[in-house]
Amino acid sequence: MRKKRVIKVGGSVLKNSKDFEKVLKIIEQYGKSSIVVVSALSGITDLLFELGEKSKKDKETIEKYLKKITEIHLKIYRDLISGNEAENFALKLHKRAEELYKKLLAAYYLEEIPPSLLDTIISFGEKFSSLLFTESLKAKGVSTEEKLPENIGLKTDGVFGDASVKLEESQYSVRKALSNNTIYIIPGFYGISLEGKISVLGRGGSDYSAAAIANCVEAKSLDVWKDVNGFMSADPKTIKDAREIKRLSYDEAAELTYFGAKILHPRTFEPVSAKNIPVRIFHIDSSSGPENPATIIDNGKKISSKVIKSISSTNGMGILRLWGAGVGIKPGIMAQVTSVLNMEKINIKSIITSQTLINLLLSKEDLERSFQLLKKMPLPAVEKIEKKEKIAVIAVVGEGIVVKHGVAARIFNALAKEKINIEIISLGVSPVATYFIVEEGERDKALISIHKEFFNENNQRNQ
Image (cartoon, rainbow, N blue to C red; front, side, top):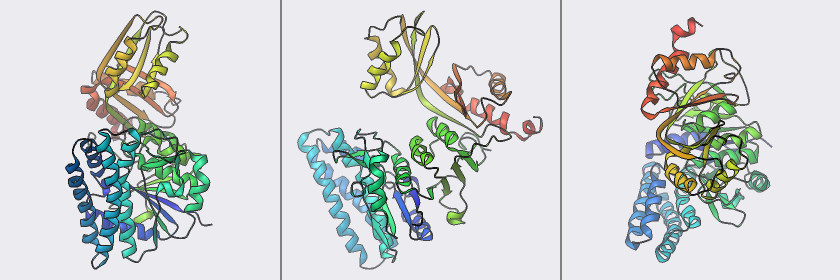
């Protein structure tokens, strides 16, 4: 059987009918034996979150929001497809909106939204989008079939709000359901628990669900269409002369996305790397179609002449510090800390320890709650707990970074020249990344200085 390509279309490229028309033409170029995983239209997921919150108190708001959401999708269809087909699409769209209306009424009568109900409500953004894609292609005479995750058996662990796909349990059913020679359209972002309940895969989770489907069908590639030029040597909003990166390893791309590069969901690479499926990133305005990707991500582990391939960063972080003369060797402290934070569904981004200090890297929104939780705990050997806000994490990424002589020294020298103080540094935890923490206000200056050190032409000639 001919291998299929899985195509992921993000919400950032689905703002209006012109964007939609571009995507439809791209899908037609792939032809049959392709699987298209779609996000919600730009802004729709946020509307559904708002609607879910408001539906607990106001029944009239439900109808107002649903009317707005359906009109957005109907307008795009009418802009693209002329003739009587619009009435048929409107009927199907309103039928799907009626399903959502029943879920929202449940929230109204309950006066609350349980996590399982919220996941079901916000999954409709992708369901509206997949219906719009399917019916638009059919109206153009393209053989197309919509498949929902619950129909193909895309199984999750059932953790509401941030589920993981259970690949082994999904593989047979997904592959069988998507075996025909047609274009399949699938809403991303969610799967179905073993108990049959919808569970979403976290913000940006459509990338992850597309990668999971690619794993299940053993796809030829996962092709992601964005409104950016693939991965860059740094964020072009900060670094004006940032350069395109043609090739990355799975590990390099995973580190970049984990530490702030928003181009793909950080978990995208788990399912594809397991089957050695390349990820190809395209710009939506690419004139060469699906033949010339901006970036290819695969299992190649090539050390470039610069060693450093890209620098990413993220704000909105905090550090929780546990001080004590013996915290580094006292048994059980980390088990207690991680256990209580895990119970509260608080994700620890990183842990850096010494004999006298444990540093927990957390999201800013989790910092205060974590601080209060740990203050109440009888932790042996912990004499003081402190929190530090307004920090930024910078990741310098490239194969060979921990083995190539002099790379770390060049990073530190670049920062020292700008008098930037490093709060914490971690070298060697990952074979492809060094990351360090600076004051939030120093972030841009740090990015510029490191990028200049490794990508400035004069510096390259002097190596």
